[in-house]
Image (cartoon, rainbow, N blue to C red; front, top):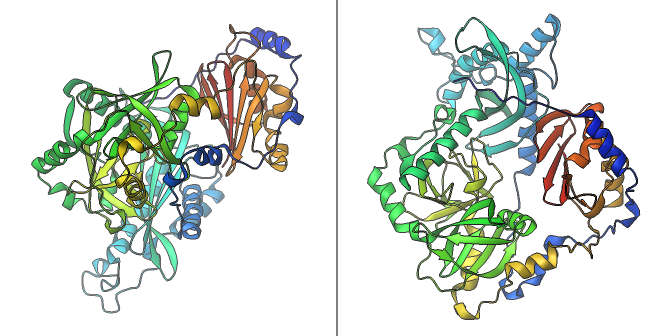
Amino acid sequence: MKKKIIFILVMAICFTISVYALTNHFNFDSSKLSFSVTGKKKDITNSFNKNYALKSSIVNENKDEEDKIKLLAKRTTSLLIGEINMEDEDDEHYYKREKEYYDLAAYKYFPKNPNPTPPYYLDVYDETVKNYNCALASELAIPQIFHKVQEKDIVYHSYGDIKVSFGDETALAVVTLPNVQMKEEKELNSREYEIVTTNLIFSYHYVLIDGEYRLWNLYGSSTDDLNEYFNTLENTETKTKKLASTSYKSDLANAYDFSKVNKIPEKQFTKIYDDNIKNIVYLASYYNNQKLSSANGIFINNGLIATTWDFMEQALTNSQYIVVKDYQGNVYELDGIVTANPETDIVILKTKTLTNSHVTLGDTAKMKAEEPAIIISSKTGTGYITQKGIVIASDNYLQTSIPTYDADQGSPVFNEKGEVIGLNTTKSSSSLISQAINTSILKEAQDIFSGVIFNKIETISFEKLKEDFYYLKYDDEKVVSSIPKSKWKKYSKIGDLEKNIHLELVKASYKDGIVSLRYKNTISKYINSMQLSAVFREQLLQDGYHEVLNSSSKCIYQNAQYKVIIMDEFDYLIIVMVKL
């Protein structure tokens, strides 16, 4: 099915000039920045009862190997498609790229069969060596995919998310390429082509041979296919309230064994659903009765809900209140937030009334690749859906083959026994592989409160937490910043920020290559904050940034080094700059 994503930029020059003239007398004073080293998230966690502190941390022992695979995935992409922004290529460069691409192939390095038997072309590789099947697959897949991809004339401008999983001397890298242009056959005439814009996902499968990872298989797909899948789930959920197990037909089935999950009878999925649905809730945040974001959560103890800190922080930043309801539509009034650990992306909420049921936790660490995984979640708040897939990896996070998106965060992942083996996050939203919080983190929270009397559990109300850390009064705003001066000097050069944004900066933060800025629009309630960023956005284009998204409330620009996200949120302009 052919799909198009068309971005149309309509800019009124006269209006831009008038906005610039209107804002020209507002000066950006970088001296107002209080470059503190104390982060807001640390302050928040310290505000909860110290006896409830969640001390688990994520130590990535494979970080060096992951970084190597990410670099290898980028090299694979550049050899498969070409370099970033490459539109024209001479023959010499093409054949050089093709040769280096073939040099990645596993079959070139796999041990040969010392005593082949006829027909010799089927008996080339030593089948006594581990991962023998990878050599056979690579000899077929690597050349075929290369020539098929060249027909598309793909032009990409940057790398998006890259996720890495490790198996038994194998590695998988899933690479997202945002906003690519490519040739596509016309629906009515297959002999004619048109240029379409879409997001691509490439899955690269590597096998370890003599200490080096070699490419043995690869697949490509469009995020449009994922979006269609999500839309189907949403539409079905609103009509049926409950959906039997469904799975996404991805190319991972060509590299992983799905037989175990496919053998599970439907009645087993129904039992897992029936046993656990009362322990799952749907959370939504609202501003002026308009829903802004949503998530799922689980009763980890009676009356205590575990969900993601990512959802809670969005709600604290943008919303006035949160509504929590179960599968029957019963609404739970929140007593408040009990504790949180932003590092592990978990927050614990307490309901005003005690519930009498909670989930049973399994052990993420015991899960093996290709074992069944089941997700139960509500996408819209009107029903619940069961999705099935397999475990891809289970180290710091549980990774599964079940695609998720933002509304799935906080939803539980079950094993075939109906035990929770993970809690989904947004770290791999809209990707072929989802990522879930490890049960060791969930068990820590469960254990802390297992011996505490419910009525004695202390909380901080949503309103209090918002007022103390996220709400700034119009007449009494102050700059809160955790950006080192050296970083500010570097990032402020993007789009000539200090010159081209003439609003009052009230919040600024930096972490792991990401700068987040919040400006208050005090100029006019009739001019939205996005319009006041017109000069800044024009400067980004002049500086060679590529426009990824342009809408009335959100714009994204990107080059090889940075992604710049600009958002309008009520009376504020939000600018996020991410080093790629």
